[in-house]
Length: 156
Picture 1 (cartoon, one colour):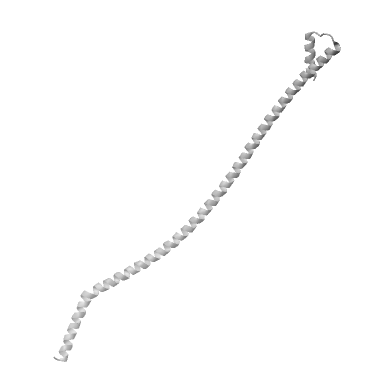
Picture 2 (picture 1 turned 60 degrees about the horizontal axis):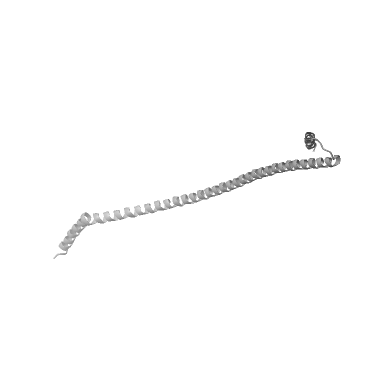
């Protein structure tokens, strides 16, 4: 065989192989490479979105935690205020009750004092009558005696 014909045959086989590769082998490889590049780009984009979402979630959680702390502090302050108010109301109620009890005791003391005075007046009147009877040793009529006792009671 001749070198030119061999070279020409190899050239024809090379062009057929190149044409076959460019039409049947190369497009699926390029398509697979493009698909792979697209998936990598989507993965990178998803990773970036995930990073951004994580930052937003972190900010929201910090904000929610801060709001929760503020709310709990506010509720605690309200509870303390209400407790102080309840204590003050209880003190005021106790003061009113104490004043009522004291007033009742004073009224009872006053009544007892009046009863004691009345009893003492009766006893003094009886003693005065007994003393007057012993001094006079005579009888006084009942009506005059009764008038005398009433007069003495009023004077005492």
